[in-house]
Image (tube, rainbow, N blue to C red; front, top):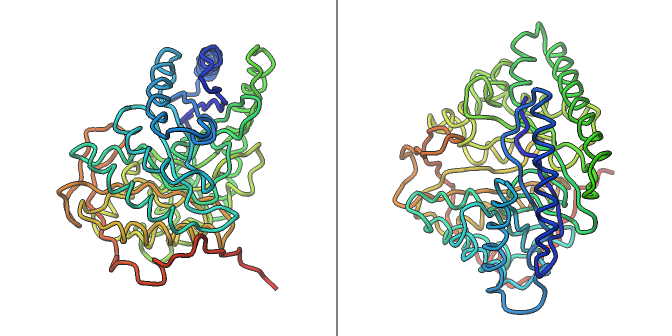
Length: 410
């Protein structure tokens, strides 16, 4: 297990109070040192702020670009690897969604998001706007890579340390830990004599590692002068693009012949259940993360045609964080993107669980084309084919919100 990110959650003020960022950066550096001294690798330290439209308040939305550029500069000075501006929430002017394009085009280390579902419903205009934004952002660079820094969020509360979903609720600063822990599941079931034994070994491993993380976190809180509180651990079984650190490998160690085959849903549910039963201070998703391009086996199964977008949505119903780093054809239409986002929003709302969609149309590529990025955290795969045929009249209707409710069991 590694730490994917130590994420500081902060209200930077507007105009930005530079001293707050400097103090947060000093704390993050101290935290990195403390965890690495304990033998726990830390991949990144990150900053997530309150949602930028609320921070900026009334006025020209173009200020979002200067804010993003200033924060990126200050984060570099404070040794933060990345910064999240948080989402454009449903109550924010839709122009803030469009402003995200300029933010991502003007920066390299800034993330942002759009909320497409909340307890108040699914705003159809925001879904369409998000789909147009994803298509536009794919053309910022020839390889479509900029969409790595953009996500659509469905019912995602504040406090998650994982990007692009991370944002702060406001108030005093906090920090949270995001794990990269798919290898724990691989090890637990590789050595198991039965499903029950593997499940128990995984629960024990999660709790053991979480105890170490919490012990260091509490010590950091006691000695800091920056006033940060500990927001918990998003102990997700996030992968790394190696076979031994692949969530796909873990699912296949349970006996699934290949991810995408029948039995995969059960495997996902069993792994997620172990996370649910483990005791630790949790935040964010704390589930399975199935990012196609970040997982060596998932990338292979997508390339072979075994794993589809609908499969990933199905598994999200029992475990994960939604659709992540999904390579799509460069000519995917706005309507097809909106249809995918609507499915994510509906699943999230009916199941009352947070989900995200990070979709990556790749310019000039068609379904089935090989995908290779010069990026150490991505594996090679192929472009997936959406089952899109455009949205019909009613799904493109004029309702401001669709008020789906969670399923009631009577």
